[in-house]
Length: 300
Image (cartoon, rainbow, N blue to C red):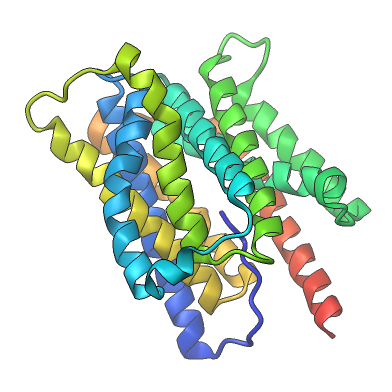
């Protein structure tokens, strides 16, 4: 859910490319999540994240070559790249930790609180103005999260807190991305994040490593290749279409999560999960709409 600014007014062809790209990205990310949940039965989340980024280097090499070679990797912010990679590693580690013990669609729905965190934190961290209407949408969205998490109720899942921590870490990484886009290329951020997130998990491997058994190595490879390709499609989506057009299609992840969860584990999310997810979706879409209006006024 990286909302990248667009400096062009895309025509119908570009809008079609942007929408197709985000639909593919969402499907690929859902496949990655389902595969990680499957592997989580036998492997620690840190190892899954580590191998996801090791294999994820393969598509990154292709993107670097296509994006201009090593010249595209020039950077003036190595420290910020390292921090961003660490935040992404923490986000994926906490998400996979919660995903092991809860339904796939429910975990994806809670993870959609990330845009709410981005809006709430953009004021203190980036000094971006957040109006009363967007603050109201943020509060309503978090109420939707409470409906799903149900703290203090019999249906409370402590693993849902892992997903919320993942959403917060991802939001911090995206806020850092907004700052870095002023001087860094998309290819550089993708490459250094993939390399850095892999290195972040390396010190843990002597304590957690378990040799992949049977065909599991192919599943780890699938996570890396599909995840890296999905990241590229996200960039393509926001390059070819405005955020207000692309963002609503990100919520198709809930559909894929429900389908894959039912096929693989016969999961059936409770009605409260769908109610909370609907509240988060509506608040997130409203925030996207307000940000698009603000961007249009600034452009004018």
